[in-house]
Amino acid sequence: MGIKKGLAPRSFSEVGFTLIEMIVVIAVIAVTLPSIYTIVFGIARQQTKIYRISKVKKEGDYILNIISNIIKNNAVSIHSTYPATDLNEVCKNVPSSETATSLYFRDSINNWFGFSLTSNTISSASSNLASPVALNSNKILFNNFSIGCEKTASFSKANIFLIFNICYDTGSGLCTSTRPEETASLHYQTRVKMRN
Amino acid sequence: MKSVKRNNSLSGFSLIEVLVFVTILGLFFVAAISVTTFSLKNMKINEHKILAAHYAEEGIEWVRWEKENDWEAFVLKSSGTGTLYCLNSLNWSTAVTCGESYALGTPALFKREVTLTNSGTPASQVNIKVVVSWIEGNQTMDLEVKTVVNLWE
Image (cartoon, rainbow over all chains, first blue to last red; front, side):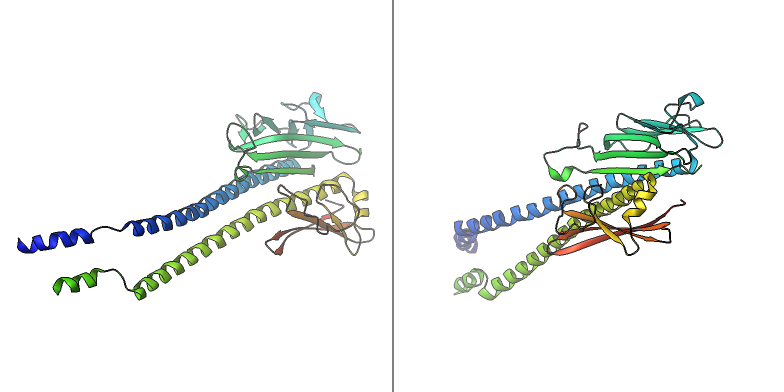
């Protein structure tokens, strides 16, 4: 008991920090925390930007390649609508051209296939498919999509051109954002000549 | 006596201890921050590389478009030794380099140049080389894409 009594006041004076110590510690934390968070947010922003750009590029490259390869290898005649018949054939005479948001083709065994844009989805339709297949995900928006054909010389096949701008959906169907790291948009265009 | 000794041993760290601790902490922070800034810089470079690859492919596609459109006019743009065009916007400029005009992309950081070299008499094949360059810090980065087109494809 006697020892405890003797200890009590001393240990009381030793417990805790002084005001100066607390101020110094809080000041150090106040300086380091904001800088750590700035770096963390910088990394997060940069990752968002890279993710969105690579997503847009991946989908854009995919759409461009698949459409131009299918057309190049399979298309024989060009049609404005489906099912492809002789009545709706376009780019048959010289000179003629057509620009639209959808175009259909007939292949060498008389099946038809085509590509069309409806409300931010590029879909591939074909007489062999039960329903059209979307080529892009729902995170991608199209500002501008046109597919068309052009025939300038009677001795050569028609050219088919494809132009589109795609961007990442920053929310509620918009490409723009007040935060620059959220926007990613790319322009694509190509022109292919039919082989068959 | 006992209590005085105790007080002495409880009176905080020695200067050496504090110095060692602060040095270790400082080294740790400096290392951590340099690693993160380095990775941030790398991420920025990667972002620019992705964009540059897209611009290079876009350039190639446009040149291919021109070739499909009119071979005769396209061949005249090329030469045996190679003709260089600035292709910041997708149209034929006069045959000059872009120089220091980094006007491509949003934000405008890139420049795109295309070299057309033909071979054969009369020219039946054209080699296309697209170079996209941009400035990263104080060094210039390049990304090159090549392709060959010919009259018969």
